[in-house]
Length: 428
Ligand SMILES: *[C@@H]1O[C@H](CO)[C@@H](O)[C@H](O)[C@H]1NC(C)=O
Image 1 (cartoon, rainbow, N blue to C red):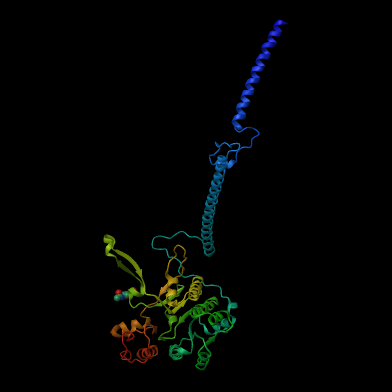
Image 2 (image 1 turned 90 degrees about the vertical axis):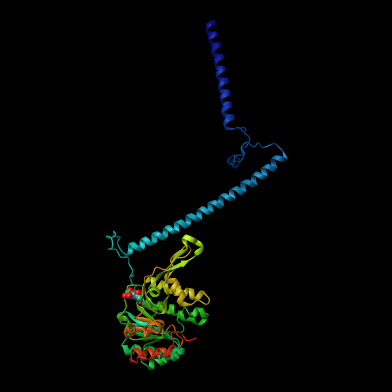
């Protein structure tokens, strides 16, 4: 029994030791996981996040509550910064997504247009420059659609805008068109007098209904809104599926221009240039001696296209061009339509700007001749004098009617000295 008691005593002793060890361990564990006690609320998670967990909340110290305020404002400003950063990241992500969408869109468009191909061998690849034409939409202007059906030949025609101020030039204009035998041309009359004048001369004429949308712009808009009218009217011709050879009235027709077009580009235009370089483009070197070794900067130059005589095909890039020019004419004071036309056609895409992707072709400057080429060069050159241009545009000179008549005398009636009385330039 004694032995049993002994045994039982030592057993009880070791139990107590185990209990103490467990108690100590439990205490350590609680101390580790709940350093501020089991009942005390833990300090705010933000405190810990910003490395302030060491801070002890004093029972009622003024200094501590000041610090709490400071910390709180710090927390607020930090979380504000955080949300700003988040917003910035969100903006960037959105921009990136938009760009990606654009890429997707372009890729999809491309896939609709045609199959993907491998590039051919060196020298055998050619990019697309003849864009597909739009599907004609007669609902845009059924009355005009009917007129065009009668007037146009192979879905193309010459179009000129005219009001009473240019009546005499208009007469020279259509007389020569008739003499050459061009059937597909149309005058857009801007007033009733021109309607009557055309009708009495058997000239195809179209006057817009004053209540039609585009003309409301012309009536209610200011001067600069009206100068965009030409491009807005042209848009309808393209929407109806026609190619237009837009023509000013200070132009003498000597051959049928439709026999001299390439029709491979969205815009095929006559140039204001006067030789190979200025008409077709050249490397113009800009010199800045202060730069020493790098003093020469190479630039590209080309004389502008003449927005008074161009052939435009009914394609999406062409219509976009007309829209862009009309839009800028409506919004920009004192904008010159020819400058705007060229800027839209030639300036490339850059940050904040999407350039137009239209195919363009410069017409032969001897065949589609401006009056500078005629009076400065051609009339003085025995060989060039014998060449018969398709048209002559009296764009560089003010006494237009007299020069137009002289051009007719020279080229049509063979009067060799008809051009002699005129100075090279305007004479003032
Ligand atoms: C202009 O270019 C044409 C053809 O591109 C060429 O035949 C002619 O010789 C050139 N004229 C001059 C003056 O370089």
